[in-house]
Length: 373
Image (cartoon, rainbow, N blue to C red; front, side, top):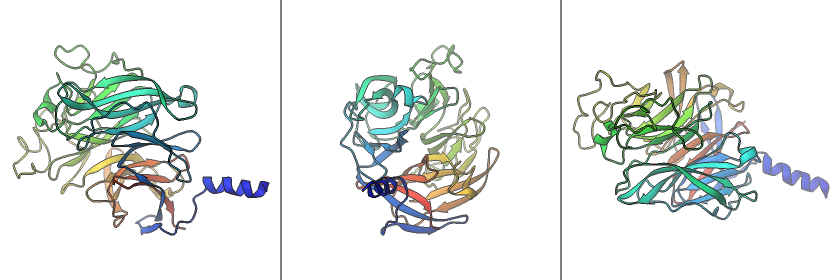
């Protein structure tokens, strides 16, 4: 009896064969994509709890806990109302670095309010039984809000110094991405409790929002901290042929919509072209566009040849991009998982060293990538 229970517990922790798994050949590894969980409504964000369970957001406004064997909890109570229109809803989720002690969960969402909706960020304590969020505090609200369902961003990551970065889109109001008196198309930097750091670049500038770290972004939906340098990397949706990776630096202007690669969807050129003095160039870009979303640096041991690589989940092109780096340069790109047949919203490395993907579908899945042999 004890042996049977031990084996059952082990089965939850170890990757198990799945008759529906897909196998893909890549340049470095042959991998299997195993469906860990199914039936999620447009899952957007994923965070791993210390006990191996996963905290997952669904864009319509639900947060759930998923066990390693794929069991999906009832919706976590206490999630605020969301502006679930177009690309808006409940978005990213991550844990406070000291979650094991304080049980604080941070998340972003499209918040309804006067004028429409806008990206917001909040944190709350996850109850001991995981059933509800307690003592919620909003630490950022996009101002002003606006109607429509475009370009909310948004990823949320902790830097090594304990401060938090939040990416926000320009809500389709592209000219406002150059206006630092409002919140449009920016990277936001805050203390964990929501205070503005004293060394933010616009703290003492009249007419500027002090929470801004960088601006001139279009719709950054991916963000990750480089495991060696500690710098923030982002990936954002550009226009037709202008998706790009940036390393946002304090106070810098990343150009949208004055400069950019590609063209507007109606064929018009972007602003003044691809370069302008005082505006930054991307680290890497794609033309034609690929519709990038979540991103992660791989540091695990399950795929040794991927160590130090940057992984980017793709929506429109339904693939996973692997980028080999030399310092801050991309030196090689591989498109993987072609044929997966689903929009990939996010990619995360699990504590077990496997790679986890969220599929942005009405019957969304959590996929785990494993070595095929």
